[in-house]
Length: 350
Ligand SMILES: [Mg+2]
Image 1 (cartoon, helix red, strand yellow):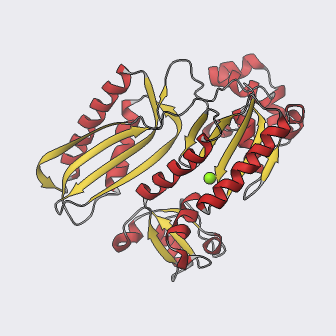
Image 2: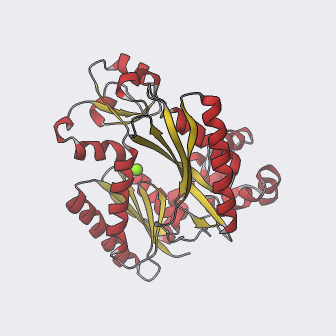
Image 3: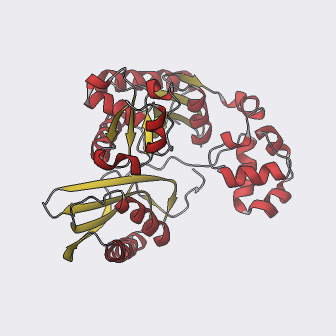
């Protein structure tokens, strides 16, 4: 563990869309999962500040969002384009010659262990400026000791900020924050912590280790370490070229989900066999559909944690393939995993 520069893109999908369609800038718009023609069946993935002002939020059903702002501009999420932009960001980061981990499509952790705080912060701000100048996209940078605290510093600087959090300042930074601010604490863990009277990270830091172990297993001791300012996670340099995928042409063109799901199960199993052979875990899942008119579309999702589970791959792929259902029948379907890391000796919390 050492100094980490964390980069998180601001309103990434919305910012990408503004780049793609400059004419929508400044107007309320949202990006959703469903095609334009059936938009009310989908969910809002992201929206810009102007749409937020009307109460539109990500995660909201598009039908409800359109009640709040009926004339809002609607765009179907363009995962191929976002992936492309993400790769261009990664290329900029790689120019600095340090290891870079792709934590998600729009979050990156750079191993700056060779630098001191001032130099790392300066580098972080330079990268921020470069991403803005080269791609026209805003981002926030956090620099701290360890990936988790660099990410938390970054969260504090959103949007368009730069935050330096030195090791000595971490305990004070953490103490009054609510436990859910700690990366790795989801709603379930939060609820459980609340039920035992722990609401702040400071309270978690003082909690009895053996009690946390009993309640939460090994995650309990990791949370205890983190709350005390100790982050043992490593930067795992992305092998961005590596992805593992399988696709198959179906016996006949179909929109029958029972048939498609069977294909997805079998393709997912084949992908997992390949993953296990190479001891990889995945963080990104992509489903692809090629239609009767030979056009194709893909949908991707980044998981919160790395996984090697076939069950997760199947369930996420099935969700994604449902978002690809249109009036056209599918003739070919595919499943692909990317953002891979070697599953040996990794920290699973981030
Ligand atoms: Mg972001």
